Amino acid sequence: MQKTTLIDRFGNPLTPQTQLVVVAKLPNGSYAEEQALSSWQNGQRNTNLVAHAHGYDLLNILTNELGLVDIDSTELLQFRVVVTADPHVSVMRVLGKIAEAVIVQECNRNIFANRKWGMVARKGRRPHQALDDFKAIGTGLNSTQRHHPQKYNATNPQRDIIWIHKENTTQELLQLVRGNNSGVSAGIQVKVSHDGLMYLYQSDIVSRRYEVPLVYFDLGNDFHNLTNKIYAAQMNVAIGTDFVRGHTISPEIHDLLVSYYWLVYDLVAGRMRIDQLIKDELLFDAFKKDVQEQQLHKQIIVL
Image 1 (cartoon, one colour):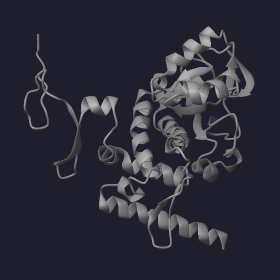
Image 2: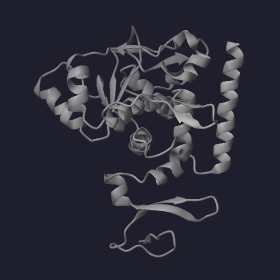
Image 3: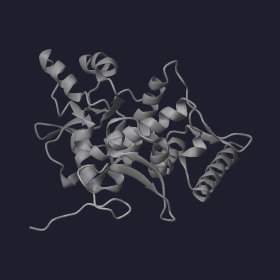
Image 4: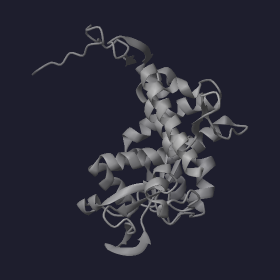
């Protein structure tokens, strides 16, 4: 039997007593930050580590999809978000919108992910290849406003994400009822929280507020607490169809949202500046230039 030996970043063998760490590797091959893996998985994540790994992508979403970042008169990036008395509430509002953008990105980059998410949206039982003809768009995302303005509705009370036909963009994916199209547009409503019982159960589940599946990213791992309460109340809510755990569909997005939470929290709480999301100065300068050009283009259109 072949024996596999694990080694650390210095080439030393890992023993059962060795502490695994998460590290940030710089372009020159050196390591800037590290955090114990156990702490990373179960506690507060090092925001410098997260920024090294995901800062550029987050800044891109906040700027180009959510419109929460712009440049002021002094040419500094500004994070424009309404801060509530409890910063955690503000963070979750932003994180819910980020989740929509990340899901759309995943669907548009990976046909298998698109099939899986599309299956959930149409209340199907298997990720059919017919879904390859449809693409996901966020009803409140700036990319939808730019490319599909007729589908843009930032205040849509029912659907955060819908699927439109790639060739005939007026055609939307429809839900299935016993194998047939129901005539009801498919879609999903996305929620992110650490405490679903407080922020989700009464307002969204008990009220049966949505006609599309409610996808819940339970950053506090409390999805099963909610399902137990649903079963106990004998509610007419189909677990896995009407109420779906985001982690089940995409563990990768769930973990990414956990990381993003700590970055957004530090931004909202004033512990981090928006420009600190990108650690590479050249990359940051290029990003800032793009934002300036976009703002100039908007001003020209207005004039």
